[in-house]
Length: 375
Ligand SMILES: Cc1ncc(COP(=O)(O)O)c(C=O)c1O
Image 1 (cartoon, protein in one colour):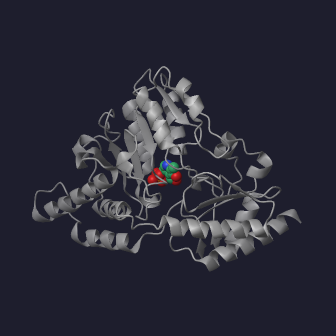
Image 2: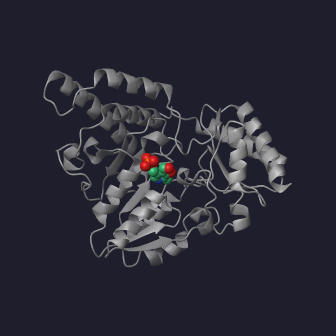
Image 3: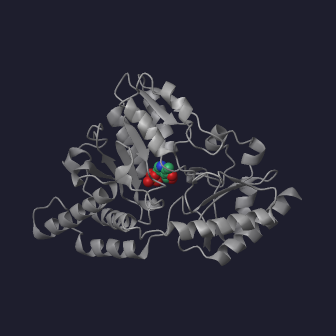
């Protein structure tokens, strides 16, 4: 098996797995229980909160654990978007943002405007001042686009938002741990971190708030867990794993971004040599170090992915929700990519485990699949 779909979900880092397994053994008790095993579980839970807070540059009380990035995004939106509010989001946000906004719109009284992006999937900064006038209740921008990998101009976006006192919801799901940014120095009000994109297992994510951001309002009510921001007994082991992943990320030890980018660049060179009319989308802007969105005119994503899958190679057509299906990509539509090119796209996302020989094999199989598609 050659796994080139790390943006859908990653393999768990061995150090993170060790922390997770230790927590399963040691912190099985309910962290709200006042007895000794409960207190031990609480200790591990709060240590993980400190690790996430350290990465985000905030106090631990500003970290709310959720089960997924999608939940954290929904919670931030529902905290800020009261009836009558307006939201601005980039047109290439993840569906967890766009569908949540649509749902709020359908419930009435919330108005949504989408900010256009350029041909590389980066927010059009020139369009923002108008969209932020009058100031909306939130501006949502991803740190990194999950299909193309392009990094958003977060500092510039944040400055425009701050000048108008607009809270910035930064979706760090694909970027935290993968790009060596100092998250505490970036201009966000809410930051979302998703464990399973950061070499932790699924089951834990974090919504971090600070500055103008009101404290997250609960989506789930019940017990007083998470300071009343999210009811439900905390899943300590996934949270401990998330904490360990954040610790490694803050220390620059989770990914070697330069090494990943070097492999990715070699891969792109090899792809273009084997399929000269292929296009690497977003190649010329700052990107995630592990992501290649390759589009082949005249080919069909589903056929290419099926051939890759038959050869034991896992890739995707973009967002995992659309894997294998020949749906139009709203991201590529927003970028102005022609349908002829978009329908022959394959997203490869590498991880630290990826071997050069695996990349070479993927090139070989893709080139043969393209031939077959055209023949
Ligand atoms: C940019 C982005 N935001 C949010 C999410 C949702 O995260 P989760 O899978 O943790 O709900 C994803 C997952 O693909 C993503 O890529």
